[in-house]
Length: 291
Image (tube, rainbow, N blue to C red; front, side):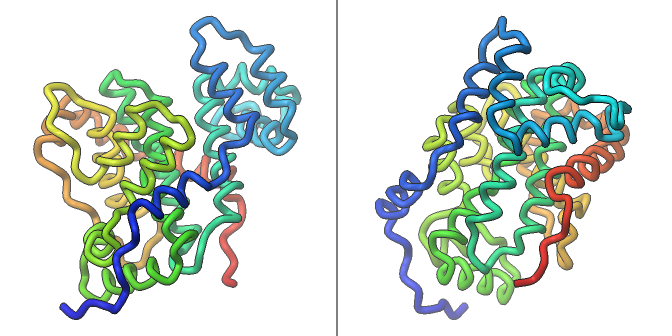
């Protein structure tokens, strides 16, 4: 295989660049802090969301979506939170923030709409798997949504090098991960984990992003196992609309640890597709237009 003349990225400089990226908006940090409290009530969350008109509008749009059966009848943030639930509000607001934030931060190598369709599909899938496994659904949704965020960061910070890596992967019919490791010396999984640390996400979310292609050995099913499986299932369902979809291999040990969930897959898959379409329509209401 002939390699392009790009040099591997300087890891220390890459970490420095990631740490220089903007922090999450203050309203989101405050909201995440409130949602981590065990005895939080609706009022401070409604007040926090009301500080950001764009986020408040998203919450009302979500609460009035057909999925909740309350179309047009929810007019206040407090009622919207009542419909959605406290924990789902946190994950959905995070999804809305990331959608808006990263729309303004990407290079030219990635197809942004395909990227977000897969991210939303993975988040919905991870949440459904977590429900079956009895694991935390909000953490699963967050980790699923962010698992490939390193792709977007690399595309933003190193657009030429990322374009070379993606072109090499296509030419040699190789996984993107292999192209990144071979050409760039860093992977999107590592870079995404660095960003998650910068944004102060929980350690288990950071690890799930870092290891979503190669879950570590574990006696019990983990969040990393969920995101690993959700990524593969989202690809298999072809929800991103990619012309030549490649389904990544499942690690046998991780798949075995998720045995209790596997019996529910025939029931889960149609639900995942339905929830994906509803959430995508709200978070990404218009298709990406070519530059």
